[in-house]
Image (cartoon, rainbow, N blue to C red; front, side):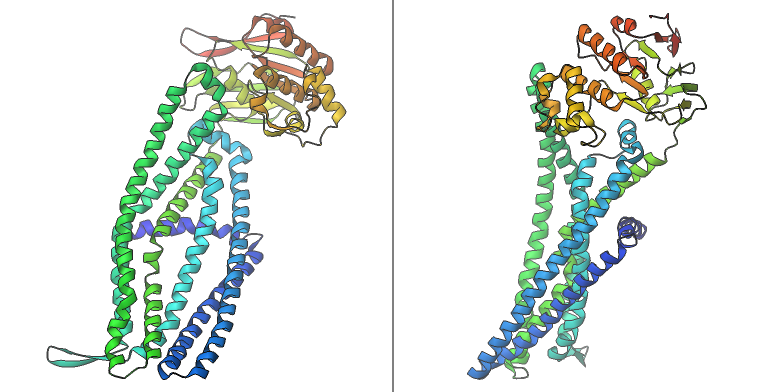
Length: 577
């Protein structure tokens, strides 16, 4: 158990440390110091208010009207200071939260997206679910709860130390007889508060410990349900065409059933914890009066002393019971830390994964495969492409049966498929563009879709309009600045035309296309290929496709042939032009 907790705090420190020791360390530490100072100021005011409470109730006991109004004025000043310090403590705390979250988000996005790690996680099943939630929600929860719990614990410790002296002084001594011996216990209320809080802390941990795992599961099933809803919304047309609503409802109801089951478990455990915490808190209200009443009725202390004793006891007890009050938050925070450390570990494992297929700059201006063997993620050989050699300005078609490895070869040539072995020599400083079968369209303006992945201002309007007209998208020339979810607005064929427009705009030296005209009719397909040849005569065009009509649009055809042993090889077919 000790090693488990130690490992958790090591992971926590590894998550938190980079921000506090990085480039923003002085600004972060300065803000933290200000928040801590204001927090300590609030504790100091609580101590001062306890002494004010003593004086105020004594004026009531002695019926001193002048002192009563003086104490009211004194309270107004203290209350104003308390409100001002509390407001700025919250403001600076929130400022620190957003700055920390912004830094963490930037670094997690860089690690996840940079170097193609996001794709490796996807194809290898890297043990990281719902990455969107981990970045969008878990990082926010981590920053907020880490600061809240750390500052809360610090405040509890400072409050405890501050009121210990007060409680020790006011509680006096308690004389008890034990085995015939008279024993005097100095500051007895302090020891009572310690025992009361220690017993409560142990019991609440025993009752609430399962909440940590339950909260972890809650975040997972909630994210799964939300992701399923997003997927359904983005593919509503396909669902409607399949008449798949009943199956979608079955899956969504099933995922929500997991949420409900987990929620019932949390409810039952929270109910048990609330029963204990509520009873514990209610007893704590009257407990100090019961213990201190004999000294008050004997005349040893005044009403003000009794009230200050009660306050001091409450502060000591609540400080010692901080763990009890914060247990639910700690359980949720622990689950958040576990998810983030798991996500980071998956990212780093994927980033450190050795690439069996390597790429390097070639000495000649051509793409060439050297002993290239492409495998599936499980390690099974998929395609032997050792003989691949692509020359500049060449138009090459790669064909083969479905599942033979055409699209995987496309990914390997793009440098994003790590499974296998061998080397791909790329032309030095080659400007390449890869067009997948389904173009990626962002949510934004049509201008952004055309320029992607370049900046929206990379091309002027005249150039963009000409590209749209060339690709038979003249109906959209007046909609460049229209902000839409274009993947849902444009048909499949229109989306593929947008991809061709991108190629015309970026003018790559090497253009790779994977079934990039599958949604177009043969006449439109031929028109776009002729357009490429006319507009980009110096561009090498490498296409992957099934249609026989594509052969006439290329100079050479490479075919993936599966032999009697089930192994696929890339072989040259007869020239077509």
